[in-house]
Length: 166
Image (cartoon, rainbow, N blue to C red):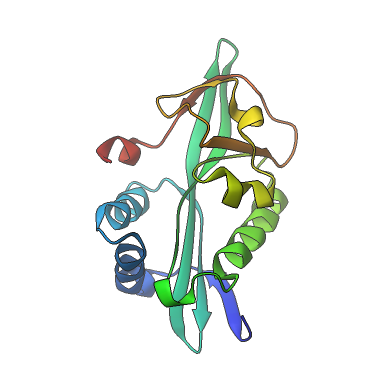
């Protein structure tokens, strides 16, 4: 989409983000998740996409841990991503995810987990095969992982506490 600007989310964006996420999902649960992750300081990266000053997309990556007998490994969870319904299928979501992956890799993050449509997230390199070794309450074909660097392939996924409220 021509004229799209990707930038970090700011405190002044909270109401617009809540409205966008609620509209994109057709319910407030995911917006509540965003609010809880922000309030709990579990956000690793949060970006918005704007077009002519209006927030039209949002993505959030929260802290997640992979635990095994050796300890805890820091990773990130992509959830949620939201795009204004009338802007879907215009690459807003893809642009947000691609930019976020570059920033996460630059910051030293090496593993991202997502629970979502394999056809969509597979375009960005996420794969269930990469997540199949993780123990998780969400273990299914939709649980996918993307290695951005050297990262474990087994262990238990421990999400931020806000996820238990879904």
